[in-house]
Image 1 (cartoon, one colour):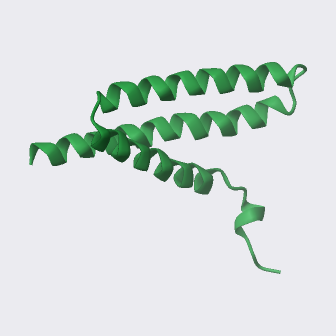
Image 2: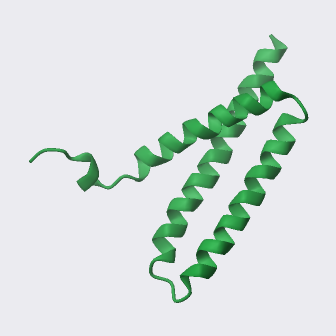
Image 3: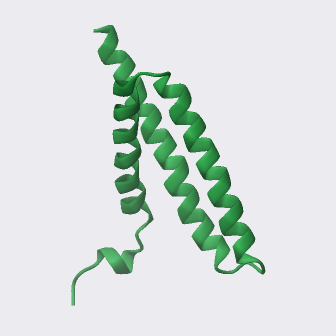
Length: 96
């Protein structure tokens, strides 16, 4: 039972890490296209998001491949969640 709780915590951590990464990507694209120096936005955001995510994966996994795999699963789940939440009404409305 204890192992299930640890893996559930790793899944939640992966979802949070994914929300940070993909939410940050969405925010960067929205801000970067109107910025005076968009390359700085995109480069800075990419570096910051990558550092946060890799550090998070490192501390969640702690050398256990099962926790890393479950965390990665949560990360991928967050991608679909953020994608669904950030779609505009035009994209979700398929009526002619």
